[in-house]
Amino acid sequence: MKEFGKKALTLNIERDRFLKEQAMERLEKYRETTSQDPFRMQYHMIPPVGLLNDPNGFIYYKGEYHLFFQWNPFETKHGPKFWGHYSSTNLVDWQLQPIALAPSDWFDKNGCYSGSAVEHEGKLYLFYTGNVRDENGDRESYQCLAVSADGVHFEKKGPVISVPKGYTAHFRDPKVWKENNRWYMVIGAQTEEEQGCVVLYGSDDLEQWEFIGRLAGTSQSNEESFGYMWECPDLFSLGDKDVLLFSPQGIPADGYHYNNIYQSGYFVGKANLDKGTFEHQEFVELDQGFDFYAPQTTLDSGQRRLMFGWMGVPEENEAFHPTLEYEWIHAMTIPRELKLVDGCVYQSPVEELKQLRENAVEYKEVTIRNQFELDNVGKLAFELMVDILSNSSKQFTIWLGKYTRVIFNQAKNRLTFERKSIKTNEIEARHYKIEKIDKLHLFIDASSVEMFVNNGAKVFTSRIFEHPDNRKVTFEVSDAMTIDVFTWDLRGQ
Ligand code: FRU
Image 1 (cartoon, rainbow, N blue to C red):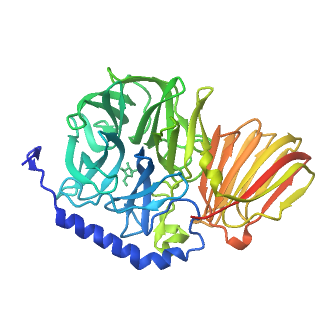
Image 2: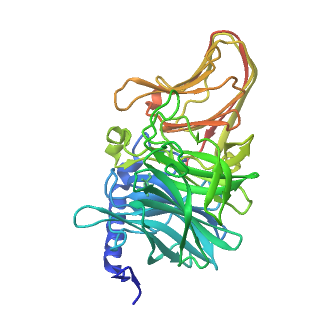
């Protein structure tokens, strides 16, 4: 019998079956309830019941996209996570698959936490963090492996890495990839000095892993402290550079930046995988909205770098979500393609999303002097593209509902997104400093807005809970502005 540490690698098959059955029972029990929510998303992935958080194991495998997700099927709260599973041939229509992983074994009993997928010899390998609380409630973490021959049924192989010396048990979210005939893994970590960092491992066979080094992190080379924990790292090449995405925790708000409790962003630089080092520039936030965290990417067969994010942030507003009474909470973002433009990561909605479009309407060269209302949109799910041809307006506003709006203040070079807080019922705002807006591209769903600014140079991702009757799109300007507007209804799944 194989062992890890001093513990036998026996699997608790019965408990695994029991947990998966219980989860499916709950899904059946609440199928009707979740489907009745007026805020239920039309074209975004949401949990079939319970709580969804991070995207996991995003991969193009045997002709299909697979996206796994952190899932607590039993409650609309965080808890022992499962890996739920969606698959798709076109990135638009997603099928729920059988549960991939349940927290049934001694090495993952308090949660099959986030991780990634790779293909090897035709099989799908999942790497994830086994989250464990010992008898005293202290945390243990194991980086674990599960393998599947068909992409649907997974067999756990148990832990392959335990926490090395110098790090706390906040050691999780393995992201694996292949480069120059070797396997590599980045893991989000915390040093014993409680500094966030990312470590690098290497392997020749996906089972034996060697610690290479601390790739990036605050207690290295006397950099200033940058958070107490970095979650969900992802390292990949983009254009002629390397990008390290991660989600740091413990960064204080700074003007218009870092206003959510936790952030997600990236370093651009050059990684040395032999030495385990990464020369990089300053951290850049990936999103300026209220609800974006823990993104993960994959490279598809067309060599596109695709990304999903979680449309939520841990701990923020979770007790106040209007969807709780319908037994579900949180959603994924739309899939986005990443490109490096002038040294920055640009995000754009994937081309495939055009397949959702229905009822195209366009308004060409409209000069607005006061107000302009679109009478054809404002339904639950639609896409809105605004090309700004000229703008002499000191301030323009796009209302997306009674409380939700986008404001560009040209005098202050400030772009703002406002919504009504579900916690306080007050209006709350996120801002970004920008000199000129040429284009705004918005994806609106029953309870979300994703706004791509100037071809994806910046993105604002937020949940909104506007009553469907209040939804209409109105432009307001202080002086003349000329725009092209394109709108489409977006079909549901
Ligand atoms: C990020 C995260 C990960 C962890 C997972 C648990 O949201 O905290 O670090 O693996 O969620 O659900």
